[in-house]
Each structure stands twice: as structure tokens, then as C-alpha cells.
Amino acid sequence: MPVSTPVASRRQPSQALARLGVVFQSRALDSDLTLQQNLAYHAALHGIGGRAARARIAEVLALVELSDKAGVKAATLSGGQQRRAEIARALLHRPQLLLLDEATAGLDLRARHEVSALVRRLIAEEGVSTLWATHIFEEIEPTDHVVVLHRGAVLADGQAGALAGEGPLSAAFLRLTGAAA
Amino acid sequence: MTGWTIALGGIATREFLRFAKQRERFIAALVRPLVWLFIFAAGFRSVLGLSITPPYKTYVLYEVYVTPGLCGMILLFSGMQSSLSMVYDRETGAMRSLLVSPYPRWFLLGAKLLSAVLVAVAQVYAFLLIAYAWGIRPPALGYLTVLPALVLAGLMLGSLGLLISSAIRQLENFAGVMNFVIFPMFFASSALYPLWRMRESSVLLYQICSFNPFTHAVELVRFALYGQLDPLSLAVTLGCTVVFFGGTVFMYDPAKGLWRGRKGGGS
Image (tube, rainbow over all chains, first blue to last red):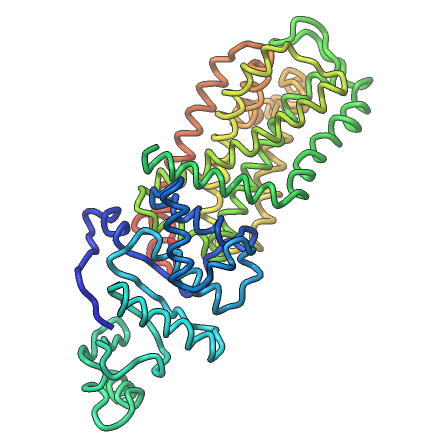
């Protein structure tokens, strides 16, 4: 998946954070609150309040196809819906870069597919640059830009199709990490 | 509204919403001091005679004496509840989403602290209302003058709770806080008995109570409830708030604090 504008800055972390949308590996929604209340809270954390927040929440909920769940408690959402809600939350402040940390971990096949399809749609239609950390090779398409990290070192950097060569990408990964071990 | 006030409002709204959805937490927070007021204080009324002690201008019933201490008890338990809530948020991952906000960490921690204190102050006023019905009636103006004292005492105890939370890695370890922080702080203070009474029993215990920041938080509340100011209590409570909150900001900085170098630390 393509990554554009470098935004991280050690000197100005707040400016970098304002441009980043993060979806964490572990669930980060408040289960006691409704989806709308969760999103309003996160909008406020980015300085978006009142009418602007309500409008943006409606927008991102439509984007992740959860508009009908706005008034529902987060605890009652399915795993896949919670993930989509977290993506909506990460998009609230219109970040330049979306970071997904094992966003599909723990999801069943259908939910994983939904999340993956949603992220690809966001990239294609909304132009959101995305950096997706994953161990699930099925989520990677041949045209994706892949960086293989192993024990803190970059072992490969390029298009997934090219890295895979003739075989599957997982075989290339095992080959690379085996050689590095 | 600026982004800062929106962020503060958002954090405060979340605290109030969570509190409103946890009715049992509100009831538990009120039952504890009420049990002390209705049962403990009634039982001790005849045993504990109280001579004229500032800010009281006359002899007072034990219930009257103990009421500010019980206000402090609500703030103390609420402060420790903040600690528990921070550990829980860290375990569930909610803390991470707070800390990816572009606002500085001191502001986010301060906003969370202030929000928790406002919830605790609302509980204190609910307690004072019931105490009023029970016959404990400080001057009407006292209900107003006690507000800043409650907020400051709450900030100090909440900061202490946050500081403690930075050192607790798992929710299971929280029981230790009850045994090593809440009970010693509460009992070794002027919340239940005046310090002069303590000195009659043990000079060492009296000195420990005098150094206990909770004693000064209670005395600040006690004097303020009667429209007076105790400068020493104000200075100690203010100073401890600054130290505890400064410590919290330091400890929650992944580059500097206790979490430095720990895997998964810093949240």
C-alpha cells in the first residue's frame, strides 16, 4: 500500500500526531459508551467539537458503513464492526497517514475481508496513505508496496509481486528471515 | 471554543458519561462515608469528647467533626479510583488513544485528572446534602467556600492516584494500593480524630499524621466549610499537588519515566 508525505517529527510530535490516524492492535473503544459518544470523544481529542464534530462523525460512519450503529453501545458491536469503528475513529481528523497495527488480528475470515476491503476502498477513493503492519500474507496484494521487517532490520523493500518472484510471498518471507536468522 | 477547551470538554464528558453509566459506583461512593456518618460517628459520639478546636467556635458533636474527614474520604477513594481507571485504560488500550491526541501529555493527564475531580466533587456535594438532612449544617456560605478547597484537595489526591497508577503494571496489583496507601493515609490523619487527641496517645503517631498530606487536605476542607482558610494546609496541599502531578507527567513520559526500556511500556 502506498505511503506518501513523511509526517513524523521528533521535534514537533504534536504536529506529527495531528496528521496520523492510528488503529491499534488491541481494541480501544470504550465499551460503556455508544459509538457516537466514542467518536465524539475522539473528535474532541483532536480539537473538533460541536456541529463540526457531529457532521464529521456522520461522514466517517457512512464511510465505514456503520451509520445505523451510531447509537449502539460499542460493547454490542461485532469484532469486525468494532474494527471498522476504530478505522472511522482514526479518520475523524482527516489524517494524512493511516497506521494500522495488525488491524485484522483476532477477526474471523469474513470480518477480516471486510476490513481489508474497506481499507483498500479508503486508499482508492479517499486517497488515504496507509501503513499496515501485518503477519497475514493473504491481505497483501501483488501491487502493494511491502517492507519486510525482521528483528528491527529492513530485509526487503519493494513491490510484493516482485519480492515474491515465482512463488508465494510467504515463501519469500521465510527465505529472507531464515537467511537473516 | 478553542481546540484545548474542546479537548478538555471531551475528556470531562467521557468521565461524566462513564460515571453516569456506572450507578453502582456512585452508590458505593456515597454508602462508604454514610456508613461512617450514620453508624461509626453515632457510636463514637459518646466516647469522643471534642473541645473547642479551630475552625469550630464551640463544642461540636463528633458527626460534625468527622464530616469534612468523610468529604476527604470521598476524594481519597475517588483519587484512587482514577488510578484504577488509568491502569484499566492502559490494559484495555484506551490510554493509547488518549495519548495519540496531538495535545501535550501534561494537558491530557491534567484534563483527565480535573474531570475525575469534578465527578468526585459532585459526589461530595451529594454527601453534604444527605449530611444536611442528618442535621450537620455548616454555614450556608461554607458550601460555596468549600468548593475551591474540594477541587484542590481532589487534585492532590487524584495526582497521587495517577502517580501510583504509573507504577502499577497490572490491575491485580491494585489491591496493594488499598492496603498500603488508602488505609494508612485515611487512618493516620485528622479525618476521624483531632491531632491533639492523637498526640495524647502517641507523639510519633501525631508526627506521622502531621506529615500526612491527607491531613492537610482534610483540614483545608474543614476550614473552608466554615468560611476560613488554613494557610499551612493550603500550602502543603498545593505543594503536594505540584509534586505529585509533576511526578505523574514524568512517569507517563515513555522516554523518561518508569516505563523507559520496558517492552510495551508507555502506552
